[in-house]
Length: 94
Image 1 (spheres, rainbow, N blue to C red):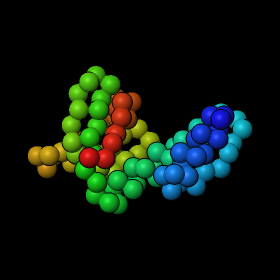
Image 2: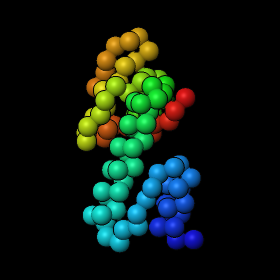
Image 3: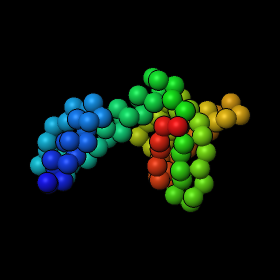
């Protein structure tokens, strides 16, 4: 199975519509769309998440908002934190 097919199957399984692109610039736009849909869903559902930073630090929080470079989160002490996306290894719902 090609990477393009595997990505399409994963997106469909997650309930995200995908369109197959042939060049890297368009593929990058598709990735941002997936990211935006994922983050917006976490905000809409007020989902508690676990963020793992590239330095090995992890914490639980709720996402309040996001832009292209950062996430505004509410930590377990109800304090707002600005987290830069380049420092994040993974985000998963708890």
